[in-house]
Length: 304
Ligand code: MLT
Image (cartoon, rainbow, N blue to C red; front, side, top):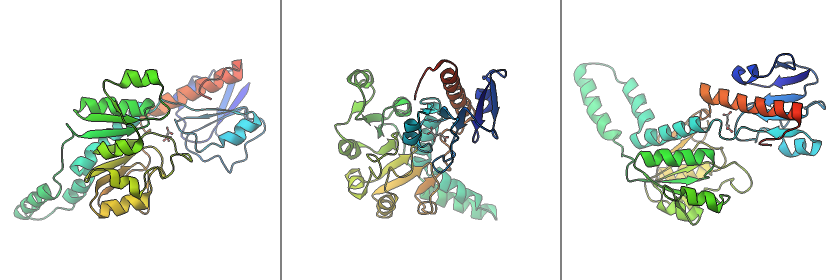
């Protein structure tokens, strides 16, 4: 019987697919053959010698010591694409929330009380203060055209936006397929200089850390909006705050809590909610459970 340990928040739908007579699945388990993890950071954990596979129920693998595990012969699996629709939907919400000042206006409306006349007066001032802008005809720049980036690009086209994409690792045939709907930018700088909104769908690594700094923000048109539903650290937050304060950027929407950003009136921060839908959690758990099972039983490797 194989033993699989779950570290946190793994949807039971995926685990229920593992046949009971061959697997024992639990959060407390000694000598596990595999570990399934969502967001728990595994870098400082002691990973038992019995572990042959780790399944990360999400796209990124930053919370898993992949190089160390690979050196030990442990296969690491992830779930690319399994939560892409959920992230896409939140990116769209982020664009709309930023363009229409929705969190700020909601906060304002909650604070209104008193006589009808006073409220009506406040409503009139709110209408002016939180007036926004519409998306059709605006340009969205998508950095990273993987499962999430392509979905975001298609959805933005459906909203009447122009879309420019940049992804250095995309194949020529994939670029050809995308060409009708997504114009290819020549470089990140080219994309930034032509985009009203920019969204990032790349992993955090030595090439992408602080990919967006003060100089690059200045390439963007005045009034642009940045959206980060990927990883904290891809943008230099200090540079973003300066550009917001100067009025060069209109808004920043990011899916991470941050002491620096949380009180800024032009920033919307969320607690990494992109993949937090029932559907995405189930899809990720199913994908990694299937992969780990196939590896333990048959030695097959997918998405490792
Ligand atoms: C991902 O890498 O896909 C997300 O971080 C998933 C999650 O929020 O668990």
